[in-house]
Image 1: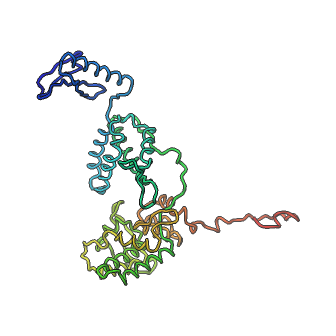
Image 2: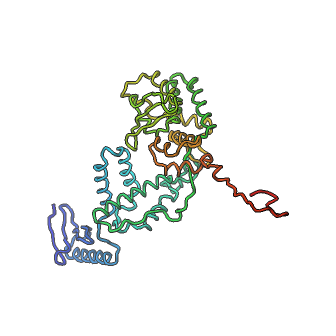
Image 3: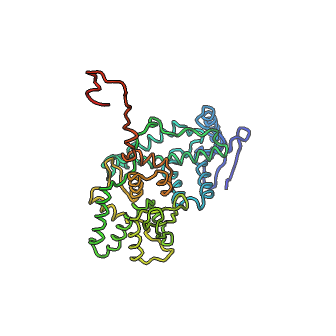
Length: 408
């Protein structure tokens, strides 16, 4: 509770003193924000002079553009989190929603928090990219080293990409509420023509090497108490490569979601799977190679209809086997994970000549995604008969012509 209060400059400045403190404090509204400061003066006359100088200094900064009136990035971020959690309830994974809050609190708000949303320009976002990609240092000023690569520790490309997406979400929220007239262009400069990249997968020879290793580990585990986990991993690998399911879809897969049927088109035993994942509910028809792993899992665990069949993958055991086989990274340095089994399924199907539209439909993705990340680097999708076409020349060849040496 304040013991005394005085007004200056027609009420634009307030002087007040709190109980137990000998000093006068001052407050004023500048650039749409209430601002406070202490005069550190016990005398009222001297406090009035300090408060006047402080207020005139704020006005000077406001007129020069150093202080701007408007909603800050922090306020827009709070509004975004409040709206996003309510609007996407039941449609987005809770951890995915929580990811936005973590990125904002750890990286974005310390950098953008006090900025007015109109000050978040493409140039400022580019400064943020440079800030994040600059090698991190510890409290002693030593550069942090990534133990995996042995190089300076920097965020992954996907990590920085998701942070830029979070910035765009916040700015879109500000635009919807009328706090930001135009959403700036946040695309990264200098990188519009990127190299064609592919996702890590297992070639047929590498896949054979992997499933033979997991089969041997299932027969002879390092410890007897690990036998069940090794057997489950072997069946997990075979099932994933023969269905193309995402790891999160595998983790949600229940016994009642799978039906073993006789396929009319091929005459083979396959699995019809009701998939529940990031794209909602969809269907998948497996390769015949998924039938035996499914049968073994059912026989081994005798699950109830509502029981989860595979659950989360044995990540530590999988990485151990990949390291032993020197298959953890492909030649471009991309790490292979449980997601690589889905990539392997797609690449193998395309290599065998499967229709790209049917593969996309069975994998619950788009043809565009498959063409961008898979078909671009597979030699088997190029039709040699359609490429190596020669025009027949009916005109007689001239003696001594270069065409006599070799055909083009």
